[in-house]
Length: 111
Image 1 (tube, rainbow, N blue to C red):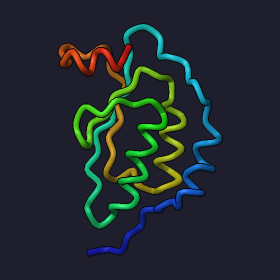
Image 2 (cartoon, rainbow, N blue to C red; image 1 turned 135 degrees about the vertical axis):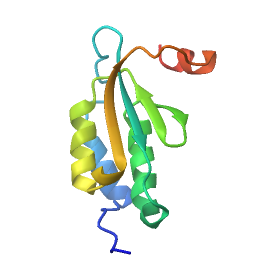
Image 3 (cartoon, helix red, strand yellow; image 1 turned 180 degrees about the horizontal axis):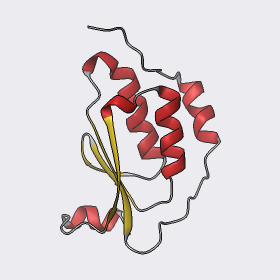
Image 4 (tube, rainbow, N blue to C red; image 1 turned 90 degrees about the vertical axis):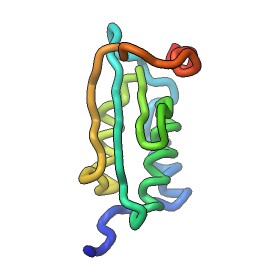
């Protein structure tokens, strides 16, 4: 196996990165959402945990452990974080229209 090429941030580093992003981002226009699906190997656990924390701080809703959804306009911030941490090999980001079906609990969180 190759060496760990992802960057794992310390709590201080992660806080510094997050401080550069808007506290209350704008909602995306219309019924658009950002969908993030990732499968970061266990070998890069710290980077994966940082990414989950980052998604949560940006206002994403966790649908499953590695599937997150947001209606906030944070695509640029998301792309920057992925580049800085060099974890793009395991992450898929989609801009979608409103999901066809979500359980009620998720719909409430996305309002």
